[in-house]
Image (tube, rainbow, N blue to C red; front, side, top):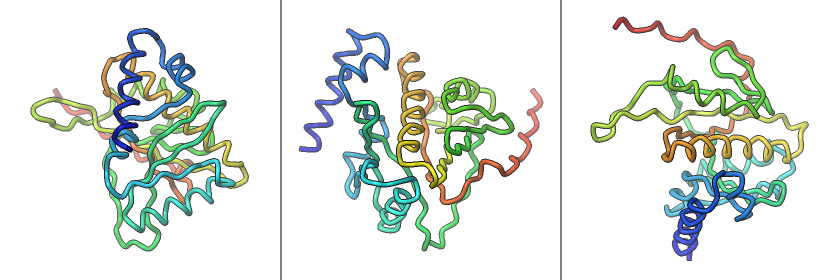
Length: 216
């Protein structure tokens, strides 16, 4: 049944691309939105979906995500925002694991509540699309059968527990729609990304200086 639903969603999105011009129109017409990461992960074993609307705040959600991470399960996230059902994925580290993750991706964005920071710039989350468009200047490329492709961006997310879960939903909605909006305009998934849910905020830690430009 899962695969039938997936095929149906892809067919519906494909049909409406020819009729509707903007991502916003598609979302409001279908009343639901699935990120490419969700559609791909939903086909894999050990994938569980958490409903954000059943949690009080970000901290409660992160507790559940960490539990799934310790069970080595993939994490799907769904939530309702202004009458639209959104589906995406997220990552959280298992607090009892001795594995230390090392990140070497220059396209790292720190998100705290509704603010974001890439290197030294700070912006509101609604301006994420402007930040995404600048990733070309800083990112490395990875080889894919001879093709040059941008590495996925890594967004570190943290929302203070003083905010209700509605704040987390609002931020996630901005992230998934702004990334997908740019990719829809380009006609392919140029700007891929992963969401890392953090127990503590890295937002206020000064970033390292960017690497020096290579001599041509």
